[in-house]
Image 1 (tube, rainbow, N blue to C red):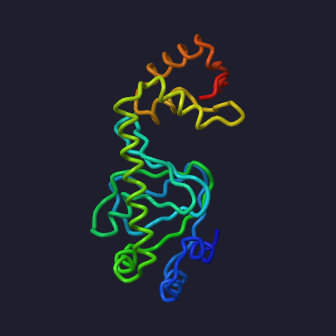
Image 2 (cartoon, rainbow, N blue to C red; image 1 turned 90 degrees about the vertical axis):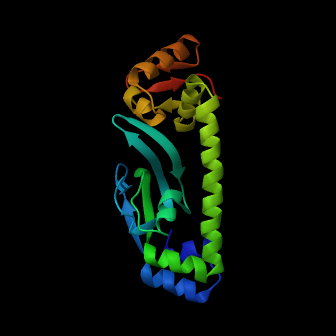
Image 3 (tube, rainbow, N blue to C red; image 1 turned 135 degrees about the horizontal axis):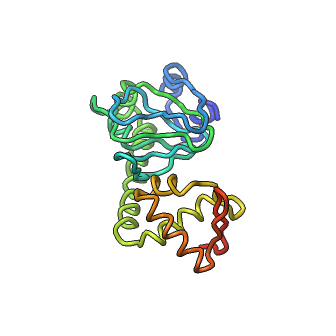
Length: 207
């Protein structure tokens, strides 16, 4: 996706804003495993995903808590909020699928939000959608057993019924330990819901 395609898809109505986006933003390409946001670093640029997928998470020692995934036309709400005051990021964002990123200096993000209705609508919708997602995420963490969260996660990650992730990766992304994940996977295998292979998990049951 190009900047022009982003402008048309948003859609942005103000000609002055279109010209400002073309003048002050740029597109960067990133491969799987690249960090586009790092914890405890100041947010200087708002990054909007144009294509591909980005995982946003918080890390504590050897554990990670998934916050959400960013897909096309989405940006990190926590980074967006940092654009309105000079503060550091509280999350990491890493590329899951090769992607293109639209980069906009934060000083423009602040000004555009008050100056252009189209941009204000974009930021407001981003905050609202992310808030709803975070509430759902909290409810899942609070009320859904880890076994069910694990199986839901495997289902979402499966390609042709196969998940190629290690037990340690699953533990990190679900915020628990490898030992717990290994035990739960073995229980799921005994229930004939999946088969544990050599560095792959084969799902036998779909959610």
